[in-house]
Structure formats: structure tokens, C-alpha cells
Amino acid sequence: MTIAENVARVREEINLAAQRCGRNSEDITLVAASKMNGFTHVREAIEAGITVCGENRVQEMTVKNAQGAYEGAHLHFIGRLQKNKVRQVVGVAELIHGVDTLALLQEIGRRATEKGIVQDVLLEVNIGREESKAGFAPEEIPEILESGESISGIRIRGLMAIPPLVASEAEIFPYFSAMQQLFVDNGQKKYDNSNMDFLSMGMSHDFQQAIACGSNMVRIGTKIFGPRS
Ligand SMILES: *Cc1c(COP(=O)(O)O)cnc(C)c1O
Image (cartoon, rainbow, N blue to C red; front, side, top):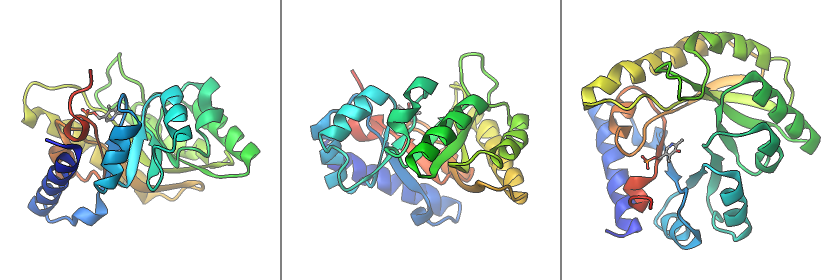
């Protein structure tokens, strides 16, 4: 399968998943998770209609961006971001998905203000409460949204999660449903600098279930680019 064929098939699967739950697939953003795929593969994906690329590593993103790999597409940062690398990402990536501490949010605000821009971010939720995963506990989200009201240079656009690996497809639903609930609940109250626009969840192996639970941003790597070596 070529990357173009993979993109077409993933789009079709997104369409079907959306249809099954009465949603419009146009409301679902496909982010191509392009880590470990070089310039040529990224270009192939964009030529095949990919409109958003998501990168995990600052160094890799910086190199590929300088090569012009993302031209014609939007760029998101979807990996774990260290505070000392914030400067290299702010204003380069349109959306930073994995903000997992208040200190990181503040640093993003500081760097964005320096650059005279407002940086869009998502708050990462550790929905499975796993030791090994980053993210806020679900109950921390309201206080982070509140703290965000006094941080200039940021706009919180929604939530992101990577749920636990589960043994069967059905076992993922409680996590995705909990995220959907959290997204809806936290969207009820209006906070300055925040708007619950995006629910970023779903990867190659579980994006259809994520869509069934309201995801409007899926991050897909393997099903587009093939297995990473
Ligand atoms: C790599 C990655 C993905 C895509 O994973 P696949 O299983 O290859 O689709 C999605 N989100 C994040 C944060 C990633 O690091």
C-alpha cells in the first residue's frame, strides 16, 4: 500500500465511523502523526490530502520544518514537551497537544508573549491514571482552566488523551467516554483564554472508538505511514 492509498483508506474509515454515530466527518480533523518519517514521506502524505501533520520530537520537527516538509499543511506538536524546548515550538506549531503541567503552560505563555502571539494548546489528561503517562488528573482540569485565565499568550482549545493499552476493543470505551464527559462538563463554564473546541483522542488502533465517543481530532501514524522501524 502507498501512503496515498493509506490516507484514502483512513479517510474512508473516519467517514464510516462518523456515519455510524450520526456525525459529520468534516468535523473530525485527521492529524498525520509523522514522527520518524522523513521529508519524502511527509510530502507524499500532504500531496495525498493530509492537511495537518503532528510531530513528537522538537529536534526532528525543527529539521523537517527547515526542509519545508510541512509546506501546505498545518503543523501540530503532539509529543511530550520539555520546558527548555518551548521556545522552539511556540509559534512554529499551531497547536500544542500535550500540555501536562501548569509550569509548562506558564512557560508557553511567557514565550508566546515574547513573540507577540497567542499559542493554542490542549491540556493532556491522564485518563487511565497511569504512572507511566503524563497528563493532569481529570479533576484537576477546572483548576487549570481557572489558572489559565491569568496567563497571557495562551488559549486553551480543548483536551487530549492517550488512554491505557487494553486487551480488547470494548475495554477502551470507558476511557474515551470519560474523556467525552470531561470535555462536555468543562465546556459548560466559560473561562477567559479557554474554549473547549477540540477533543484530541484516537490513534491507529482505536480512532473509530474515539470517534464514537466524540473525538474531533484523531492522530494517526502507523495506518498512514506504515510501521515505524
Ligand atoms: C505516534 C503517536 C500517535 C500515532 O500513533 P499510531 O499508533 O502510529 O497511529 C498519536 N499520538 C501520539 C501522541 C503519538 O506519539
